[in-house]
Image (cartoon, rainbow, N blue to C red; front, side, top):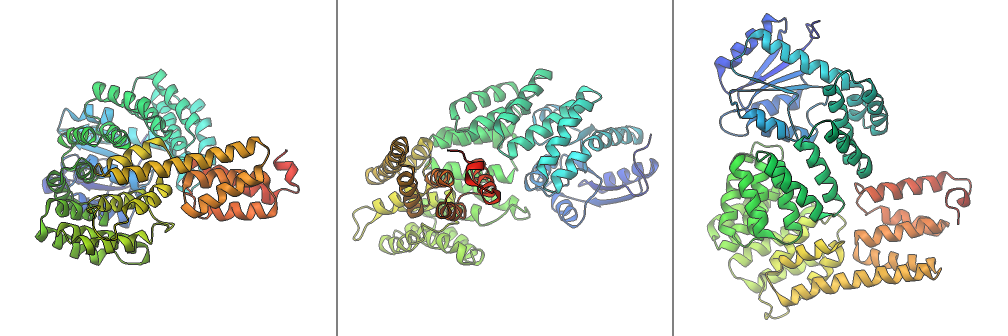
Length: 535
C-alpha cells in the first residue's frame, strides 16, 4: 500500500545539481511531485526554518560546512525538526552503517548509493510506516503533553507488531523520561532495550543517567566500554570529556575530545568544546586553532552566538595576540547588548586588558563584574570565565580582592564535591583562590549540616530560616532547594510565601524543582494543610 499522496512534501539536500535533479525524477516516478531542493546545509536549514516537510532526503557529504549527520544532530538538539517528519540519509560510504548504528541522533533510515527508484520508495515507505506508528505519541510531545505521550507510549509497547516497532517505542519512551529527569523510569526502559539487543545508544542512555545523578565514576566506566565497542560513537567521547572536566582533569578531557574531532572534524559544537577544554588545560594556542575553525564553520549555524567568540577572546588574550584579540573584542561589543549581558561585557573587557598586562584596569573591570555576581541569570559558564580572569591577576597589586570575589562566586555555584574540584582546577594553582573555593564549600556544608541538626531536634522553623537566609544571600541552588522543601513542610502562609520567592530564582528545569512546584500547587488547592502534608 502506498502511504504517500499528492500532498506529500519532500526536501532534497545534496551539493550536486545532477543528483538533486535525479532524485526529483525518482520521486516523480513513484508519484511524489511536491519536492524542493537545497544545495548545502545552510540552504537546507533555511528552508526547514520556513516550513515543515514530510520527508527529508539528505546526502551525508555536503561539501563545505556541516555534513548531513551534523545537520540532523543540530536540528534534533534544538527541537526545530518535527518528530513526525522522516529523515533519510543518502550515502556512498559503506562505513556509514557503523556510524548510524552507534549514533544517538540517528536518521529514520539510510540508503547506500547507487539505488533505484523502487529501492528509494521502499525505504521511504518503511520509514514512514514506522513513524506513523509513533505519531500519536509524537503529537502529544510536540504539544507539550509529556504525560499523555508517556501513557500513549506505554500502550504502544504492547501493540508493537515486531521487535523494530518495540525498540522504536522504548527508545522514545526512554528519551522522554530522561528529558523529564525521571531517571528510574528511563533506566528501566534502557535496560529493557538492552535485553532485546545490545545497542550503544542504549548504554549511552544509562551513562547519561549516571552523569545526571553525579555518579561520575559509573558514567565514565560505561562510556569507556561504549567507546571500545563502538569507536565511531562521538557522543560518548563528548560525555566522557565532560565527566573528566567535572573532576578537573582538563588535559585528559582535551585528549578525548581531540579523538572525537578526528572522527568528526566539522562539528561546530564539538570544536567549541575542544577549544574550551584546551583553554582549561592551559593551552591557549591550541584553543585558538579549534575555536577559529569553529567560528569559520559555525557562522551559518543557528547555534552560533557570543560564547565561542568569548572563548576565542580568552585564547588570544592568554596567548598575548593583541591584534586578533581586538578584532574579536570589537565583534563581541556589537553582540553583547542588553542588561543581562553587562556582567559578560565587564569580564570581556578584563580579558582584553589582561592580554595587555594592564593589571589595574583589568582589576577595575573585574570589580564591576563582581558587583553583579548575584544576578539571577548568572550561568556556570559565565562564572567560570570570571574566575579564570581573576586567576590571571597578580595577587600583589593594590586593592586585590580575588579571595572575596572567588569565595562569593563559589558560594553561588558550588553544589557538589565535583564542582569544588572543577573550580579549584581553574584557579591556575593560586593558593589564595583555592582556599576561597574550599572555604565557601566548607561554609555551605556547615550550614546544611546545622539545618539537619536543627530539624532532628524538632526545630524545623529555625532550620528553614537558616537555609532561607543563607540561600537568599548566596543564591546557592542546593541550599535554596533544601530551604524550599522545609518551608513547604511547614506549610503556613508565611512559609509558603517564602518558598514561592525561592522558586522564583531556582532552576526551573531541575527535577527536584519540578517536585517542589508540584507540592506548592497542591498546597494551594488543598482545603487543609493536614490533608496534603500530615505531620
